[in-house]
Length: 137
Ligand code: ATP
Image (tube, rainbow, N blue to C red; front, side, top):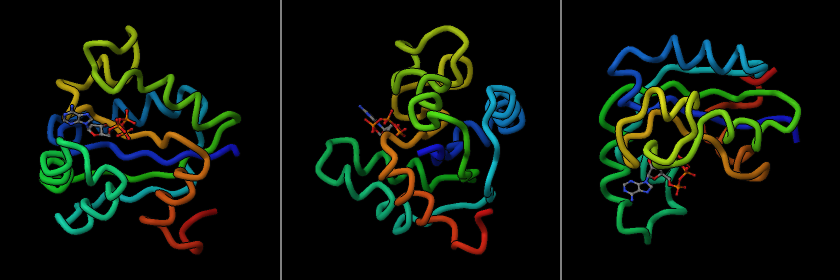
């Protein structure tokens, strides 16, 4: 598919990196097909990350993702999922390549600035979590 889903996470919005991150995403060739600036409740963050329920960091992840504002967006580009994960870099910013969004803007493996879907199937599921069909062009 040619779409992926992203969130700019609470650490990055709080530090004022939203504009710079969106700029890097757009300059990398992604088109924004839908976008909203919002804040998740704990319940919503828990539901979004339900696949990680059994992981030891689940509670920390849910607390963090509901701790502040996020920007959610559906992005379009050829090879969107893989190219976006390349653009954001490794989950742990210490291991992320130079120039990637996480290398530039993330502080730790937990507070890592951005989310990017890991498959076409999850991109569709995650996009539908935030956007109705009417909001996507
Ligand atoms: P994302 O799904 O957000 O793009 P990812 O696919 O790179 O991240 P996952 O292993 O799926 O990484 O983990 C999902 C999210 O959980 C990470 O982005 C990070 O915010 C958090 N996380 C992962 N590992 C840890 C950890 N060891 N400690 C705290 N939080 C973690």
